[in-house]
Image (cartoon, rainbow, N blue to C red; front, side, top):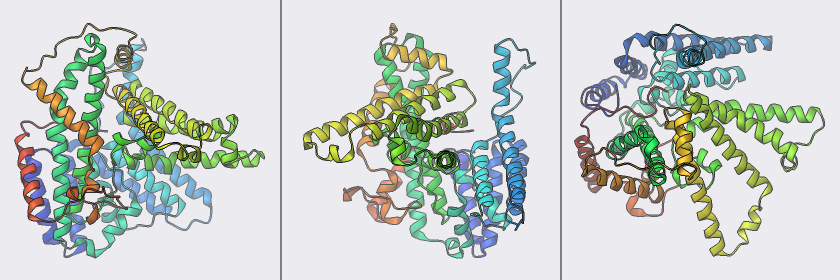
Length: 516
């Protein structure tokens, strides 16, 4: 079931809300109701994978309880945590990567009998697996404390985030599920939630989906693309991906808010970033946070301890040397971002996507360490500082949209061929897209509007910042006209936008992060 489907908007969501607010006067009844609704939401796509989700929830809940016991021998906790993490990773490997490995072996003349794909990818397996691995690691560290099964089940299965995130953290959600105040209907929270949901739905249906046919057509004929068309393709896909995925995140955050809960923000105007480090702090923010918590930081800490044990320098002084920079920044950065690329999919292009961003981040870190210091930049003349900031943004923007082609391509060979065309190494003849002559100008207009919104407008969290739409502080834009309030004017505007989105629901289109 998708958020942009009639069955969700007309049947599932209203029934779920009515049942929840009827039962939520009893906190546990409301939680159980949401768990049941979330399981139905998951099973609606393919009921045969519901047992997998249930087994995953029960298994990890049991491992979590075992890790919260007071063991006298620490290695017992390490063993239990190791078993729990290993089982989760094996399940993810089986469903997400095994078929692709077999297919790759077949392609390189290592015969494995495969007539068709027999290992289907369960919905949202990456998200609910990573969420639970993080929970187990925090149980091992003594951070996670939670023994109520239904609260834990809701934390994992709550339908707004189940398919494509945001990736939740137990410290943010379990306290909310334990607080009876969150189970009382609140008009303001509901209004904020439905506004956020409407904004997200509009991003998906009015901006992302109309660009999709152009992207598909250009990719299908990528060998014929001219240099200009290749760059337009890169821009079109970057805008489609951003508005599709940020639209989903807005809808997820809005749905949670309707029920009285707050999710963390997942996007903060990432196309306005002025460096790749800044970009990853704004794009898929919950994934970046997860990778820092459970991959980068532990590796960096282990490297620091290794250097201390050998009387090697640590800290800023060590990273200012080539050896220290390679050891303390390059190694954990490259490992983390390569695994982030592999998390997105099993094809080689996802590893290359991670490799590209790993190189970007290493260069960015090198500039920060070995380039001009902040005090020097501050002392520059205003015109020079403006030019520097614009160049930093433009370089980051170009690097980002170039990398996204590797993410979208049917294989790394297609992406590399497009890169050659983009940078003038090869020259495609150009072609006329097989799109209606009246539709093509509308697509270009949509792209122009999308670019203007992404680069110049406040994002949805900033528009609603006065009413705490997400966990954490949101810094609002200065323009008061873009500050939402529960007023008749905003109600009419949001209702009109919602009607406009319904007019664009000609067919149900999957989200680009669907089935990750």
